[in-house]
Length: 332
Image (cartoon, rainbow, N blue to C red; front, side, top):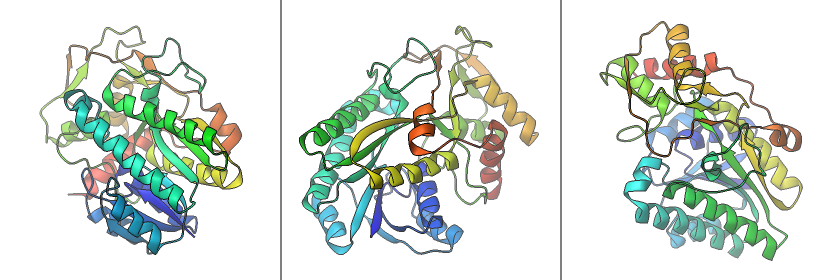
């Protein structure tokens, strides 16, 4: 029996495939390389010393999904596939709704056809919108302030309704906070196609001279240093959260949401200062205007995942910053 990982060549997906293979799981990866690279699949095999099956296909393609399920005994699915840039989603909402919903419909319909009813879904803390208080727990009101977040919220609702219609499904909705860092080997990390949208790839570009200045959006928020506060989690800790979630969906039915974060809030300047200190490099930055829709603070209460999944983030902010730089240095 195998675990199908959609979007398995992406940043979080590739690290999760490594941890699945290290845990002795059989893995099947499907990815269309929209925001990833073919080299990631080879690096997964190289790092683990283990083989896995790979299909280059679009999860929206029902014929391709049918082929994958007919050729493999898929026990469970980890669903990463989807567009993920908040800013781009605001400019291209139709593209985001079409892709993220269509690929999920195609996947779930194929899973149902083959009686595969164990799913771990890659959701996001964006489903909390702009939280009124922190830390955020899973029972907070849900809302979305951009098309990307709306697609995650719609898919979560779909999963809950799917379970309500058929209680033999077992679904874990994993609400990520802000993954950064890279594999300790330095061989695999966050390497987005095109212009990065997240903080750490932008820091790396500024630190390496590929970008003249890092823009810090606002320093007048009601936080300790005036910059936005987020819950940054090492991508390997996040990947291990998926291993815990797979074990959970194997053991019982239901549809449950879990925050995957550290429970600590770090500001943008905290990240910049830590990165400079641990790596002995300078990051040139400039303070610019706030971005619309940015919450002052958003960090998790991960107690439910600690309690029900037996999972806890272990890696420090120093490790996150050190591993991110190590990955960049190893690409030269």
